[in-house]
Structures are given as structure tokens and as C-alpha cells.
Image 1: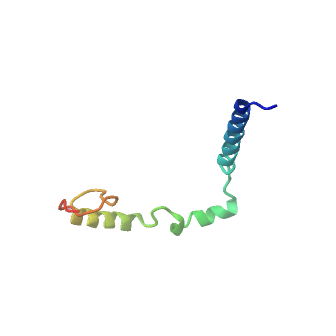
Image 2: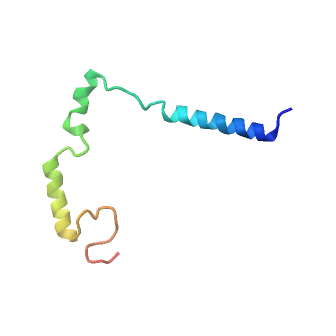
Image 3: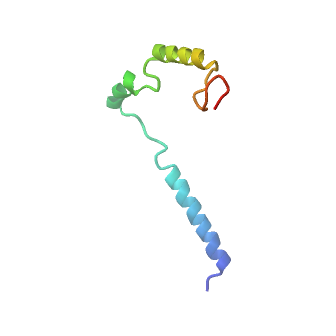
Length: 80
């Protein structure tokens, strides 16, 4: 009745369609005007205080002797 190749083909098509629909289901969402004030607050920013962030980066750079070394272990001396 049904060929195994046809079943596998239709299963692949179904899964592809399913995952495409699931992946794009939340792709388009508008920010409501009454939510914009909440998102504009300093606490909602990626870096709430830019001056404090730069000061922390300068201190870290001075201590570790490496710029941007937050993602690796060990100190600036080369020991791990």
C-alpha cells in the first residue's frame, strides 16, 4: 500500500514544515507603546551604567594585563 520511501519522504516534509513553523512562530512581535517605557529604563539595558562598566573593564585590564580576557581561565601571568 505505502512504500517505505514515500513514508520517509512525507515524514521529512512534515518535520521540516513543523520545525519551520515552530521556529518562526515568535519571530514577529511588536513592542506595545505602554511597554516601551519599561524597556527604556536603565535596569533593562544590557549595560545599565556605561561609565561603571568602563571603569570595571579598566581595573580588570590593569590587573590581568590582557584586554577582554573574561572568557578564559587563569591570570595574566600565563598560569592556569
